[in-house]
Image 1 (cartoon, rainbow, N blue to C red):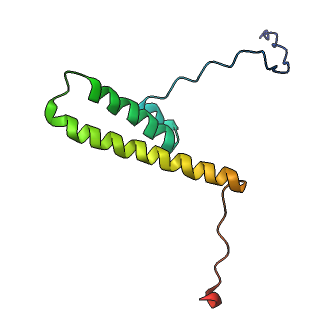
Image 2 (cartoon, one colour):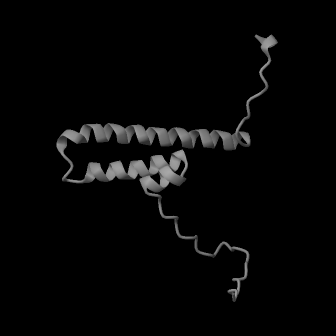
Image 3 (cartoon, rainbow, N blue to C red):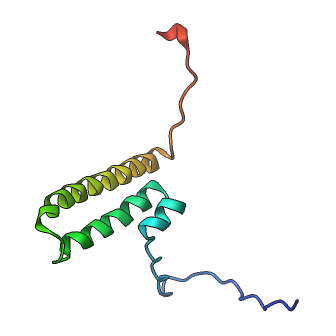
Length: 102
C-alpha cells in the first residue's frame, strides 16, 4: 500500500493565523464521548436555541430559562474549579486517612 508523503513540521510563529476553532459537539456527541463541561456547553446551546425559537410555547419558556441559568452556573463552577487547580499547580489528591487523627 503506498504511503502518503508527510507534511513537514515547523515552529509556529507569532504571525501565523490561529487555528480554526473546533466545532462544538452536539448534545449526543458530548453525552457519548465528551466531558461533563462539553455536555453542559452543548445543552446550553440547545436550550438557548429553544428559548430564542418563536415557535417555543410560552408555557415552556420559564422552565427553559431556569434550566439555562442552572447550566450556565454549572459551567461557571467547573471553570472556576479548573482555574483554582491551575493556580495550585493541578488537582489536589486526597491524603491517606488516619483514624487516630480523629
